Length: 146
Image (cartoon, rainbow, N blue to C red):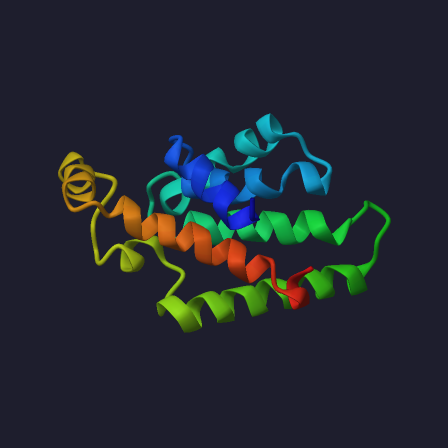
């Protein structure tokens, strides 16, 4: 099963978008799934339903950081490599979806309100999020993001 399929499965099981991406890569990156789910939980719905940076982007950035193997005594060079990959990821996601902002990706649906959450469910916007989860993993699995 691909990481994208695994992430979508986590998402379909009720995990948020950030959790789905982070957990799909957790074991491969030396983190157990419960820790990944806990670390990523606050990033869902654009950071606690603030609908800022999409949770899949936050989850992907966590993956890129874990892939770097950054350690306490590593220098600025390693940080700069991670920053470059983060910017490349954001550029690619934005190229395909137009933005990394949750609210814009969901066409203005306000998840911080009961009405917005109802609209999200009634209009099956979760399927859009599922596509964002898949896309984030597909980008992460490209050679230049390894």
